[in-house]
Image 1: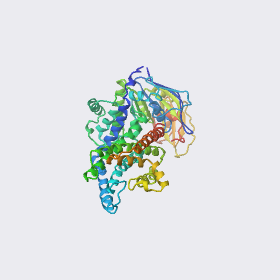
Image 2: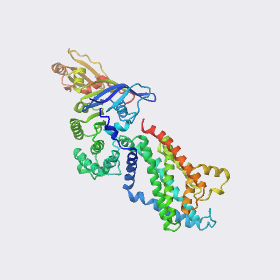
Image 3: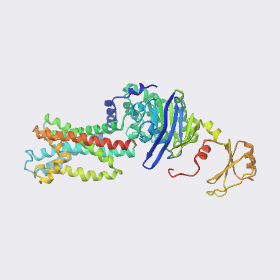
Image 4: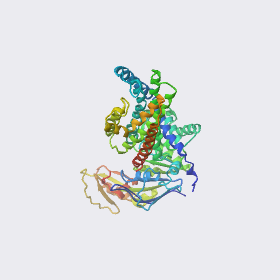
Length: 308
Length: 263
């Protein structure tokens, strides 16, 4: 069953086309990731799904969430969803529990039910010790987990997260990923945006790579890797940083890509790259498996565009 | 599809209440620093201006002793100022700096619910601030209960009226400093020319005409009538003005500010 269906959606801000003809579907219980650089249109697309932004009226496109159109039935969509915005907008004046209690009113939870629910959510996100703490006393990772707890107050069937782990340390990121995996295994559908390739690889069943408001590719992370990039990469710092030097590559079955002070040799066979490495006469190199970042950069280009 | 699930979202009353509740909780969190000034300010004003300056003003104003005249005016100006600050600087900070609204709008409320809840909260603050002035005036035996107990309700109407107007102003404002124009260019003159410190009846006809157009004059008249139990039929005109003002300006503010919340 599809929880979200988006077809041919456009969104323009003045003369800027933030989202162009975007379509995708999210299966119930799946984790779907919108992956893209800053300004690619991920957040805008996400906001249109829960009614915080409106799609262009001129576009023929449709958005359907649980059978509701967010442009008409935003309350129904929001009631069934939990949203983690990009910024941690907690109420600094209130403590942890109070922050959650004021949000429980939005869902008309009776106070007793709300308190029980809050206690279990704080336990789930490992914040029980901080129940009475002021927001200022929380670390960045704790604030983020608290915002996630807030989004889970009404036991949402769909959890929407805008860059859930941006700016957090590795430990916290792994904890959050683990929690999201748990939620998914309990049947919660998850839609998230990220520009971390690793995040997409770790938790998403399907990844949609966006660039300048358009879909570049969409598939499971594994398939994206298999279909779009060689299996191994050999990275060698270029002699003259900042300059792109065209190097010749003599070994067969090896693709070369030089940009921003780094030469990367790609191949499906590890031995071929080792052959290249041997010709380096002791220069430092780094031989690794290709990852989503390589796919992403190959698909969207290495240079900055005007929105970054 | 689970079409019925979504219809369980809370009714309008609950949605407005939850916005109001959020503001109330944040405000009452610092009860002492937020709750004391409304009492201290009228006290200072009455001691400084009323008792000091008032001694030299022996003529009665609209049949009231000066301290009584000024005190009944302060009942509504305090509501005006608190609602105006709440819905200019307060709203702007929640909108642009703290991003509080981004979080609230992820919950099942609409942007319009949020704005109306905001107006109702400002009205409540108007009620409370008027009530504080009333307490001081009663303590000094300037006003007498129980008839003056109606005054905080005028404070509520004043709060709602100025919240609507302030939100409309906020919908145009791009940087927080622009509010200075509204404060010194609009609210301060209104304080002096709306029959708070002296009666509008003796003003030159043109100034008097302007005084009748601005909202504060009508609220002052209502409050003064309520405190002194001197009702006449013209007050219906003041009441009608306030009702129409709230409906029109409020609707416009909701319309304009909604576009800033949902893009």
